[in-house]
Image 1 (cartoon, rainbow, N blue to C red):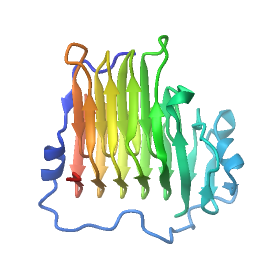
Image 2: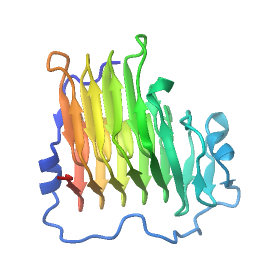
Image 3: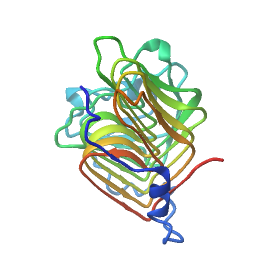
Image 4: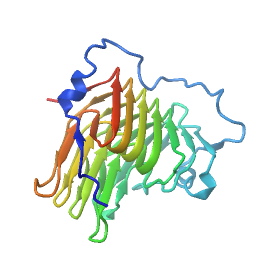
Length: 270
């Protein structure tokens, strides 16, 4: 699926200066999240094995809560087909990494999602292992996405009060098609990101297709809303000019539809 045809590129400079009039804002990812909204029938997650099994049809309309920090011991297999609400309750998922040798098309805490009605990820932090997240594709694949926290490939997604910390370059490499990399969301149709932050470097690399990298969101086809967020790190996109556009933005890489950014900023590491 080649989706980098008509694009709006948001540069790091534009993303930064768009919000420079705001001197301060509420601190993203506030500790001690309110648990009064957690339903009584919520599914509680306490182990890595429980976390790995929250995708699929059983997640439709369900509310999942994280009861404690989780330290992953092995390479992570992204959660696919998640269709519910994930509430981290202020806890974090640590030591997350996906290796290039695994040849995954989607790399992140969550993988490919096809939730038409949208999903919500909130109140959670993800700390990336020094191995980073790397997605690659095979000759029969035509797109791929990498992200640090939420969604790679979905219709509608909301990310609130969350963060991603990357210890090393956060990269996706696609020798046969387009590439998108984002600190929270790699690719989605409609994206809303509020009260979030990302620290670390992100890169999208393609040798035969367009690419987009954003500190928060790599690529969106329709609508992006960013409010009260910040990014600290280097964001780069590299692809041959003969094959498409290379778009890198401190907050958002590419928007084909409409986007709003408020009370947010990005700082490049010099």
